[in-house]
Image (tube, rainbow, N blue to C red; front, top):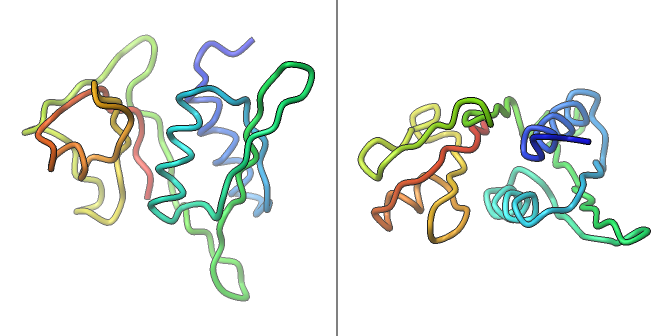
Length: 132
């Protein structure tokens, strides 16, 4: 049993990305769906779909690569807030990842969103991960 579903999701994406797999399977939770939506909107993955098998829900993420040499779109993906050490930021102290080239995924009272959207709405929250 996994105690940190977000870290498990990010690790599966990181591992599949390192060996240039096309598709990665992730256990489907509300949080993983929300993160997958953001990754799709920001252009880090092609698409994702959900399916159910034996009453367990899963996400299939289609990873994205560019060019003939299949250069990785996701260069680094790292977990920030962990179960043992939660990291929070208010709207004024939201992190800027690689001077705006990357994104931070924030869990707010208005839902899961990027650092740019949270800053424009003037709300803070838990910093889940950085992606660039």
